Amino acid sequence: MLCSQGVAVVPLVLNSVFTVLLLLQQPAGVVAEVGISGTEISVPAEDGASEGEIVAEAGNTESGVGGSNCPKGCLCCSDILSCANQGLTALPVELPAYTTTLDLSHNHLTELKEGSFTTLHRLESLRLAHNKLRYIEPGTFQNSSALRQLDLSSNRLDKVEVHYFLELTGLEELLLFNNRIVHVESKALAVLGNLRRAYISHNRLTDFPFFSVQGHSHPFLATLDLSSNSMSKLPLVEIETLPVALKRGLYLHNNTLICECEMYNMFRSWERKGYPSVRDFREDHTCLVYGERKASIKFFQHRRFLEVNLNCSSMAAPVLAEPESSLLAYVGEAVVLDCHTTLRGQHLTHLWVSPHHGAGAPPENNGTLRMHANGSLEIVSAHVEDSGIYWCKVFDATKRNESWEVNVTVLTRFDDAEAFNTGFTTLIGCVTTLVLVVMYLYLTPCRCWCRRRPPRPVHSPANDQCSAQSSILSPTPPATTEGPGRKVSNNKHVVFLEPIKEVQNGRLRAAAGALPPVSVLGHPGRLKRSDTDSVTSVFSDSPTVP
Image (cartoon, rainbow, N blue to C red; front, side, top):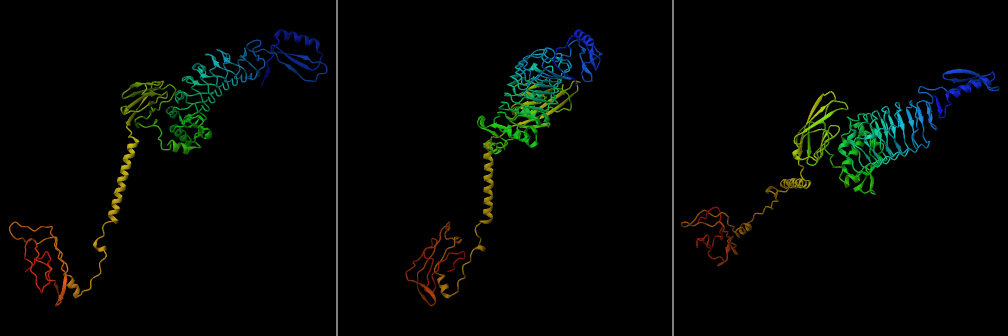
């Protein structure tokens, strides 16, 4: 490898004069070679010099005299030009055209002017880190389509404009970290179709156009570092539509995110899937409780707080794109319809036809429907009238086309309180029924067979005598009647209690005058008393025979 410090080259004429004088003055001895316009002249060295050859090259290059000049203070090594840490406030006037790697880091450059690198058509890597760059003029990178790596980190850029990278169609790695960027224009990265890695961390971004880096426009993008910015909310629908390869390398830690269940559930799903962007920086994922900057928590370490206080464990993920031809959604939810196709390429055209809003192509947005750059259609807030068949058609550069239909059904979600009341009422009814069944099976009134039987009385004449003390009328009166139209009342119950006066000849004898004639069922004088028979009057089912 040929390396040289940048010095002034002696003109060809002076070299020739110097060579002639040297030939006249030097004695014979060791040979010294001095190149003149591509020829070699052997000259003797001075007396006392060690044997060997002293080679001095002063040949010119393809571009003429001084074309191979290395800028003063820079180091040229083959196709590498390093001018780092030289205190430069402007680019060197002449840069070797053969340069493929140019290092201008750690200087004091404040802007890049139009055509700054026009002569470097072989340039592949440009390092401008640790300068004071504030602005890049349009046309700065003219004739630099071969550039693969651009390092603009640790500067003072405050925005990324559309014209910054228009000529860098072959760029693969872009480093913009540690600037003061507050905004990235939506089409600033659109032309970077070969981009593989983009580092925009440690800036002041409050949002980012995720829709501009979708799979069809950036098929090779696998790393997007947006960590350590000032984003408080994330467009979750746009992020979920990104290719899986990009989501695995999407770094969003150390932002000022507000603690929300949708955001937490997204990162939790990424953790379960083992995405490196979450796995490698698990401790750096933070959020602000209720948006308070002082209440910052590491949500992977305080899951219980989010799942209990914010009820994140029971929150369902938003309805997103599903590879199905039929989708079910509820009123108010965001629904993304993906236009599935087998066509591949960077120049695909998508057309959607909705049942009520007509046709549209991305990036159209009418407030109700939003078209994404990847061809998907988002229903911003679903309503019942949004139900129907949505039809998508895809065209490629060769005019081939494919179509896809999605049947969307939007339902009304019942109020949570009403659902709770209905469920509670149903539960109470089930419990009550169960209790009644148990009572019927185990707590029914005790039947005769389970009652305790009274002791059987001992038979004696005295008991027979006492059995006549009472007479209970049966509730069913006799069917006999006297007189026309006279009926016996069903509610008359007569009981005779006779005081015992004495026992005569083994029979009870009622006291004289104790019982006057009794009228039974309205028939006076029908009951006769005898001195020899016990006075007993019992109404029963058997008629009394006089």
